[in-house]
Image (cartoon, rainbow, N blue to C red):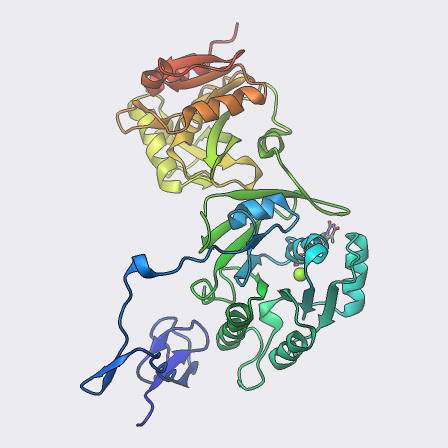
Length: 458
Ligand code: TYD
Ligand code: MG
């Protein structure tokens, strides 16, 4: 039987049944190449044949054996948290992030714990063995179970795995790895896809836990398009501002756990340190008595985290006011400004408005609405929010305050960090028992909230 062929674009990975000079998806020229369609997987034993086509019977879910996945700690509690309670044996984890953010540092650091109970092979295409040794010394990673090799060829990598038989394999980075059976250069979509597939087979076939580092390019995707996300078990992104020392690790995909947990680290001279109290980190350096800032509490997975929202509202010099938001959904910020104008009575439509979340956090929870409104009003009215006040609540289109989930957990975190006042939606205030030392200020709408949060200067 003749094998059917498919074509795909080496630039964006788009598959197409016909060859074309120009890729219909990304518009690149001369990037469409032919790939033979994967041969059909032979039917397993137990199948039968209907009109020449083999049929494999589905199995009732009740009869399937559920094997618990085997998890192990990486020695970094924050990484374990994002992975859903440790790394899963035989899984493939992609760690993405901008160059220089600390991916290699994180991977080398976890080796010291992993080596206590397993053999680790660290394959680097980015650094020489000598450079790896220097980095390992700096990070105090010194174990006879850690094997390093500087290698970029997929064939040689597989040979090293065969020779060393490691339990954990770290590949730094997928963009430097190449399969010489393919014509395209290392880092191209077909190479990255092909090498990841080979690593996936290693993970599933031999039960090796594989961590793969991938650089995120300017557009924010790994290897240009996000070609790898659907292939791997977990995708973690390491984010942070190059100019500050804090780094946030979050899961974009996790086949073995939730994706809403974050891990927080600080880059120090001796490597990455875990930040167990992200709220303290996010609130450090908060200005005293400055208008335009308000603290809120959001849930990052199971963990309540305090975040500072800053706003700047100034009369616009042009007839077309500017609106910018950083770490906060742009459309939601625009909606809150409209509610502030219509229901709060502040003439913000003629003003430029900037909203910024401190510490590289992305607030996508409606619970942060109220603090954003209070920060905007504080900047507009030039009156500071008291330093010990936090605002939590979702704002509706009529300016009313809606309740948020896990309020009790949030207010106990608020108190733990020394705050004494918390503005909350009125209809939840009665059923809440605030922790000792915290006063709840129940409000029904944004007008009441602004009046309560921004007292006239005495
Ligand atoms: P690195 O892990 O090499 O980044 P990536 O692999 O994501 O490209 O980290 C690079 C940066 O981290 C570099 O600017 C130096 C800094 N760094 C420290 O501050 N302390 C350390 O102990 C190490 C190893 C790196
Ligand atoms: Mg690196």
